[in-house]
Amino acid sequence: MTDDQQTSPRRAALVAALRRSAVLILVLAATGTALGVAAGLRRAEDHTAQASILVSPLDGNPFYPSGRGDDLINLETEAQLMQSDSVANAVAERIGDPGSASDLLSGLDVSVPANTQILTINYTGGSDAVAVRRAQGFAEAYLDFRKARSEAVTRAKTERIQNQINSQDKALSALVAKANAETVPAQKSLLQEQVSGVTSQIGQLQAALAELQTGSVDPGQVITPAAIVGRSSLKALLAYALLGMFAGLLLALGIVIIRARSENRIHHADDVAPSGLPLLGSVSMDEVLDTNEGIVLLEDGESLQIGSGLAALRVAVLSGDRRRPVRILYSAAAEAARYPRTALGLAYAAAASNLRTVVVDATGEGGDITKFLNLDTKRGFTDVLAEGSSAAQSLVRLTDHLSILPSGKPDPRADDLLTGPGIKTVFDELGQSFDIIVVAAGPRRTPQAQALAMVTDVTVVEAVESKSRLGDLVALADDPNAAPSVLGVVFVGRARSRSRRHAEA
Image 1: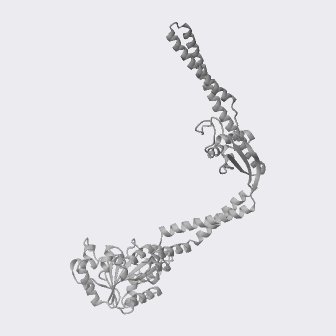
Image 2 (image 1 turned 30 degrees about the vertical axis):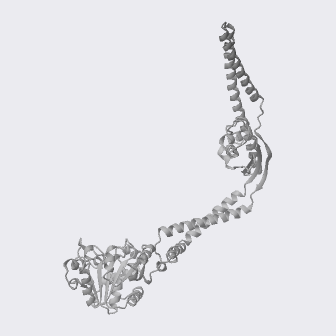
């Protein structure tokens, strides 16, 4: 297959899934639109206020590597700090708002203009007054929070330095007393040097303490007080409605794509075409069941009316390969299918045209067609292969021109016998007595069906609605060993009446 041929099944499966999911798409689009309208109505009541803060460096800021506050290295950290619960609680206390921290933070948005030391506060509330009050509250409470944090750091440093000064004062007093009492010149000189060193350290500590005590604390300032910058209008209603509709359509499309890729089942006769295999006909399960049940009830001399689906299928199959005798491997497409449902109906339709027809039940152990015809106690296909006997001795006549070779009793060597020399002998014998040989088998890609394909002329594949997968047909069309002999596909639609559904199950 070319690249275009390989993608066409996927495209067709998607189109089919879209067709089947039209109601789902409409429902999700309508739901998305409704939710968008609701969100738009909610947004139409929103009011936004904006305030701006110029942030100043602070001494003792733990986010500065030097601790001196010479420069801000990450203002995003300050923006995140403003959106903390600590600041929100301070805002609630400052403006007397009974809301919780999470409620206050829900309307807050903080941004940092590029290459600036400015924080822009946007607050969206239900009214102008609420939006302005809370935006201004966050600006002022945040500056107070920065100032208190800086003062706390400075206070802790001051206490630590003062403790060091007090400790050094005690050490100095002890050294001075010891130096005054010392009479040995060398020792006295050493003690005086130590006194000088401690005195110098105390001086440095006092200088650092004085710097901390006289330093200014400037957390920043509100450069733009809170003011209303925008109100939502009915435009929001239209915008949100469109967004909701598009979101619903995207969700529906995603579901359809997932469904098409995961399921990829055949739901209509048109779904067969993308596989690259010809469609031979379409038969309803009602017609299949009526025909199969009618064959069971036939008595000598009686005939059964053939439905239009089977009649058209007979023409397609018999005109597709005009050789006589012709050996037709009739297999299922789905791996889980036990046997092709229309095999018996096609054989009866061929026999109704006065063509000598035989059905070979090769559907596996037990033979589903054989059981349906109540022939499971009869000798059959496996017995003929195992014993090398004549197939004519095991044939069962159903009508004047239709016979069946039952499946026979189970044999553990059945799979091996299908590849042995006896299989060709059986079909050569049947070819001498019959014009049409229909070999009913399981899924075409199983080893059993592949072995039967070696002794048959053409293959007819049956696809059942909602059970067979397009991927099975594509794989069959891509199989270089199987594809040349495939005559086409028969689509079997589901039974429509309740009783038929029960019988089909």
